[in-house]
Length: 305
Image (cartoon, rainbow, N blue to C red; front, side):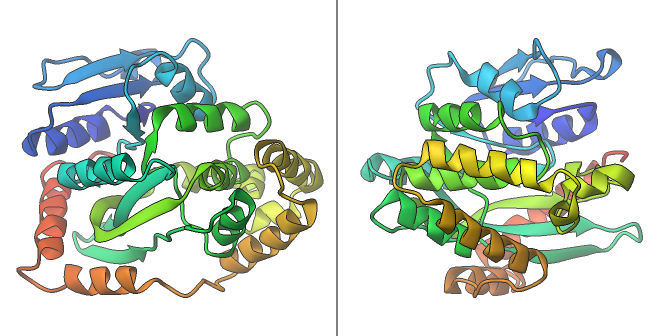
């Protein structure tokens, strides 16, 4: 769980996990300023409070924190998100049963707590990438992009991918694409048709801080950035080094898909995402019940942002 200067979010996330009976091991990667460090308190689960030696790049900080832990599997849990433990367990079981797979997850929904007190839901599509070869799976991920960083992954794969990306790509947007593409290259991406997590939209999200000159780090302005050519060259080099058999032309073609996506040309949704979002809006379904629990957590402990 990476965090920076958001102790209220961390406390809320911990409480949501505790209410589900979490008894695992949580690594809190806390890059906060001195007066905002999360104060450790006793929990019924193990918490390692990792303070980065060199704050400034979240991917490097996470890779450093996970370098020597014994866990076979990890799941990236942002401090403003909500995940369901039985679905994390199901993802681990899927990876156990499919040794060639690199990631496993369910489907996700966005929730936003608006200033007037209302709550809105939005889809957050996931895609399975099941082609036989790494270049084919990378092409699938380019064409129908969905973040894989939040899935359950094999720890060694996740750390290796982060260490491929953070030395060459600044945090912004291409780094996130590269991480998912490289994870897809390492093995099939599995998706179950159940609600895996609920991700919150709010004003303090990382990408919403890209304003003024920093707006060029975000889609779609990133394509018009003065240093776009250098950034894209680094992105391409990162992928070519990490995916044997991948060609420069396939990355160029993939960029066109990403730009189209940023311009609103979204890929066709998987049936599982469509049906799950419908169930989330129907009372007494499991999805609706779980979203209701998240909404209750938002209203009970809305952080100051």
